[in-house]
Amino acid sequence: LGSILATLPQDVHPNQPRITAAEVEQLERELDEANSALTPLRSFVLPGSGRLEAELHVCRTVCRRAERLLVKLAREQDVPRETVQYLNRLSDAFFVWSRWVNHVLGLEETLWQPNAAASGSSGQLE
Image (cartoon, rainbow, N blue to C red; front, side):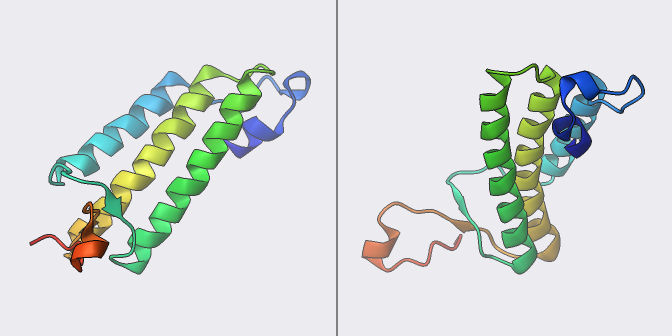
């Protein structure tokens, strides 16, 4: 992904690896597999149940930022569609992986609850 984004269109080597629909589909399959072990969400997840989970959330936010910049670039330059799709799915994967890590480690997710600060609720699942 990095070499694709760092190479100007006129400098692309014919044998340079590219992200294809197959890679996007593979990432989606891995996402679906990890997600199948998780309970459906009823609220937003707040990071911080564990260090690894929090670090995966940081990866997700950095990836989302890169995605927004890539979409902006794609409006002005030729950016392969699969590259944008892959980055989008990768940020989703970081979110699912953060939930999956909590599941595997037996950590409870911290869910956002409206007005929890006012009520003194911790936001933990009960």
